Length: 111
Image (cartoon, rainbow, N blue to C red; front, side, top):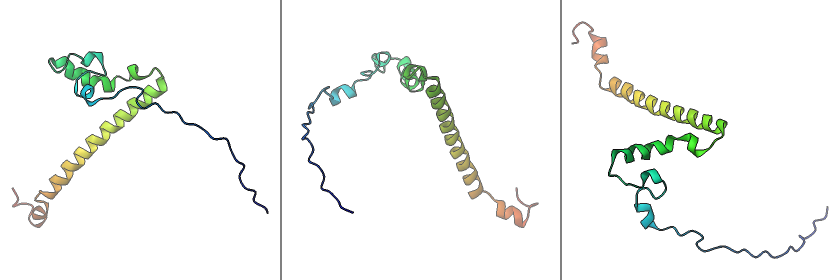
């Protein structure tokens, strides 16, 4: 078995723009720079609803029905995960601070 050396390839010149679109922190600090519905700023309660509604408006993100269905189901499962974690915390703290051991020793005297 013989191993031949690699053949010399052509040199490639890489050209990269330094800043094709300027990104400044001043724009990020202004509310609504990415959405026209948020451009009025936090002067109205509609702004708060629009801020939260944009993330869940799957029809505006894409028109692919499979992609929309996947996003809806993943959002539902994420919500269920949060609810079950909250419930498990309630069960844990209910068991930790309960008087179950005292009730086992004398169930009729526990109030």
